[in-house]
Length: 278
Image: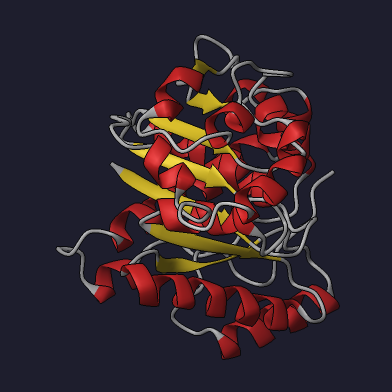
C-alpha cells in the first residue's frame, strides 16, 4: 500500500483539487484508491458525491483503535462507468477534535496511522486540513510520502519552506514521510504567474512535480461531483485529465527504486507558459 499526505498549511491552494485529480488518475490506471478526508471542510467528500457520510473520519479519530478506519470506508458516487475511489468521509465535527487529541499525551499524533492498519487499498490519499495542527500531523504520521501543494503567488515559497520543515521534522522522528515533491497548482498564463513559477523553480529545483494549469473544467468536475473524464468534450477536460495522469505517473515512478533520474526527467512537465481556459 502506498500512502500520500497532500499538505500545505495555507488554505485555498487547491489541495483537495489535487487529491481528487490524483485519485481519478490512479483509479483509471487500475489501482484501488482510498481517499481519507481529514479536512473539516469535507470538500473532498462532496467532490466524491458524499455529504454527511456516517460513520466519518471524526468517528475514526474519536478513539485510538487499530484498524477502525475500515468501518468508515464507503464507495464514492462518481459515475459508475468511471473507475471510482473509496472514501473515508470528512466531517465538520472534526474541527472540534483537536482539543481532544491535544489531551492525549501518548497517541495524539498517530491515531490515524493506527486506524489505517490493515487497509488493503493500493493507494491511500490523505487530504489534510490547511493548518499545522494535530490533524495535519496525524496525516503526516500516517503517510509514507508527502506532497506539498502551492500556487504561483507571492510568499508561496515561504509557505512551502515552512511545510517542508514540518515534513522533515516528522520524518526525522519516524523515517517517514518522504517528501515526494511540490505541485504548483492553478498555473495561468500571466506575467505574474510566470515570475513566481520561475522563483519556485530556482528555490526548489529537483522537487517540483508536473504543474497543473488553471482550467475551468477542473473546478466544474469538483462542483458536479464527477470526474474530468465524465465531462466528455467540455473544453479543457481532456487536457486536465492528461495533466493529472502525468502527475500521477511522476509520483508513482518516484517511489520506485528501479526508476532512474533520467526517466523521471523524461516525464511530461508543463511549461510555465500556460493558458487559462474558461
